[in-house]
Length: 87
Image: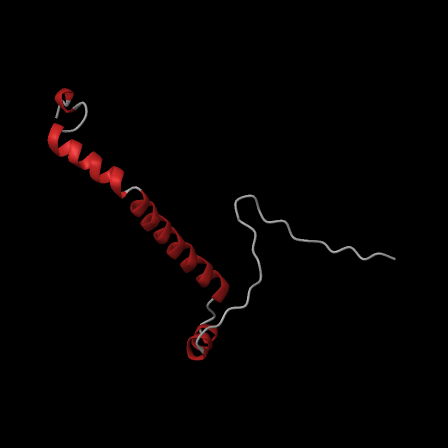
């Protein structure tokens, strides 16, 4: 007799989820529970925001030389196609 385990497949628009251990301050956790706050949802939403901000920061750091060079070129030569601007 074999036992098969069924796994829930995520909706195509939603990424999969994974169970993890997380340490939270006891007082905040209790207050969130009393307010019926979905802790997983809030943590996921906030972590997504933090990850996005860190990725943007990392991208700006990695491309800082190019951005500085481009800005210097624009300062010296103006914007590309600026002479055809009609406004």
